[in-house]
Length: 348
Image 1 (cartoon, rainbow, N blue to C red):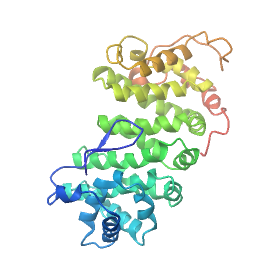
Image 2 (image 1 turned 120 degrees about the horizontal axis):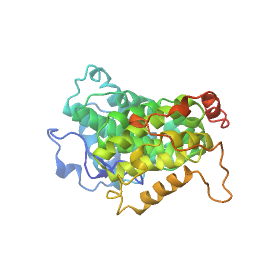
Image 3 (image 1 turned 90 degrees about the vertical axis):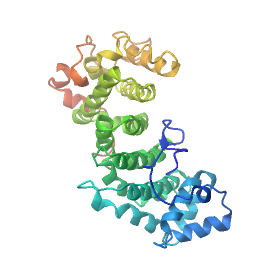
Image 4 (image 1 turned 45 degrees about the horizontal axis):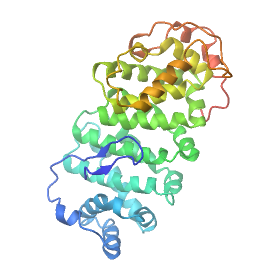
């Protein structure tokens, strides 16, 4: 895939980059400006197995310059089926992991076109109503560290990121009915910096929606899983800093602190590196993240700003547990009930 396309426009500054080494890329052909007749011809080629690979390459490289590509893909006969065939065809090589560079490239080019469909206002809802994102979840569920698999995961996350970047509650509601949160949390724990960044961005966007925040804070199990992974990430970032990843982690913590019960729990389990000067040098040029971190620490302090409800009994900041695990208060009597009493909280 072309390394010059943004993975999630308006999201983390990531780049879509498939594995190198695909023979016969024909770069000059792939990057030439496309007129309308050429576009429709390439879309028709997608349903022809003999022409599909080259059509995928050219369309994916030029997708940002074709404003109406998404509705053309969606409403053209057999096109979405052809893209899903490309996705499904590599399921057998996911486990045991036998994915080749060429297979990964083709799948990533198909995913790039699906991202266009997920991004476009005309096709986004149709994409969700067809449950198309679920076809990507087997890719997110892989654990191989090979670059072919990492590119596949990052590009799949880009499709999900395209759904959440517009802050539409419908997208959040749809995703909360799927397994996207645990899949993202695992990638946040085990992925490389790029996949961690996009996965954390998705969790952040879910949290920023009121339904998403209520859903995660509705039960102790959901909250503790998110807090545990975020804590591990903070301790990892203290050793190997990444300002763009830290930005999304801090924003997740700040949003969690908007929930009264979660705020009370975070007073016990906020990782120590966030409380001290660990990230001062890394954030010296990032005023936004510095402001978020200062607001987070203020939210967790004993004295709230005037007029702000405390939202629970006060308690001293307890020691941070290894990996950001919850302190004793989280495991005390009634904690499960407290987190579960925050409201409707979305689907179970």
